[in-house]
Amino acid sequence: MKRFVSLILSVCFLFSINTVSYAANISSRKASNPVIQSMNDKYHVDFSGMSIDELNKFIDKMKDEDQTRASGNLLNNTQLAWLAAAQIARDKGYECAALMVEFSVYNIDYSESVTDSSTPLLDKLNTTTVFNNYKNKVLNSGLKDFSGGSWSFTIQKSDNADLFYALHRVSTSGTGFMIGNSIMYYLITVHDTFDFAYDNNYDDLFTTTVNNWAWLCQQTHVLNSIEINLSTAIG
Image (cartoon, rainbow, N blue to C red; front, side, top):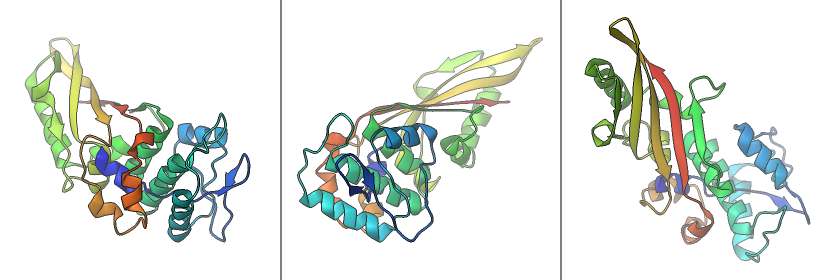
């Protein structure tokens, strides 16, 4: 999970007393997740039209300013810097990693279900060989229920670089549903904990994109450990 944090290192916002906003001559963008958009609205965070260069300049500004800005309706400078880094990660194509950092800053557990309208982690997970091998293992098991260590697997960078920064070693559980004497499909849950303090594999991603990565690495106290649960069906 720590890999993900490196990825997210730049959030460019201009501050007014109660508003963080920045207008640039780039198309406006909203958060890709409605939960994050709601939190951005609550804390007056606006990423509209900011380039990666502008996001990095914003992180510079947050580093140099007072770090105790947080109040009931404002985030502190370090939290904003991490959100900016997440936006940089997203702009570089790391949507899943960006989401995990954003949810970590806001201290909200993350979940996806196959019935959701947007499932970025499940979509990418389904493209990996490791998960397709896991699904074949489940379907060939004949078990009615399963969980535990033998049903865990690890996401490598070679599987999917974005997932690698969002998930690590996941655990799974599942229940089979039968018609007659045959199991027709399984409902499974994929679980992980996103915790930047867990490991430190983000440097290769962020050192070239975030100007103040070394400073951000010293500010992980504003990131919260969150639970990730992905629910889907196979059969």
